[in-house]
Image (cartoon, rainbow, N blue to C red; front, side):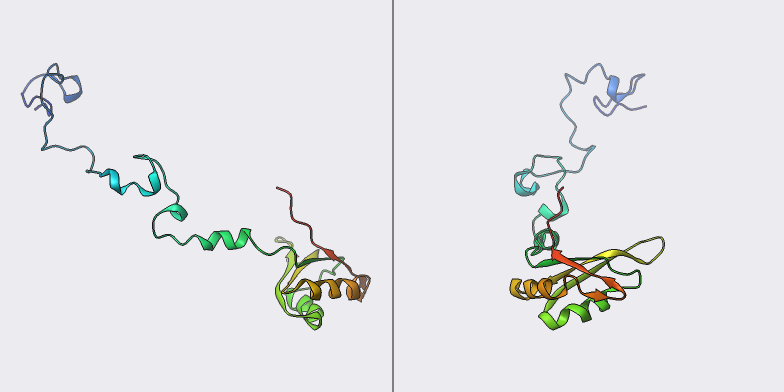
Length: 154
């Protein structure tokens, strides 16, 4: 057995070498690949984890668009029938103005509507007009309740 620290043959391992404090470090054997301090992105310390979104060259707008959705033009629709789907809500709300997003909550196990949904309008005036006209409107043998959507509390 050859010790990597002192280079002598003997009955000791590298970690138990009695000469490890006296011997100069051997440059031929490297446990870890060489790293440069300049490679650490964004002031991160050596060996610390940097999420992909914070790495150099990462596009930062992908995840933030979902969190910064314009909620002020969002309308909540409740008392929907089990048969209601997103195209049905789109057809119902489209006459009031351009709609940017429609969502109907669907039960994952049964595949039927959970009875509520959300409609996002491009302009707040169109959303207000839709609330005034469709709140209390009879749709699919049920009376709809249409109101401003409140942001979800975390």
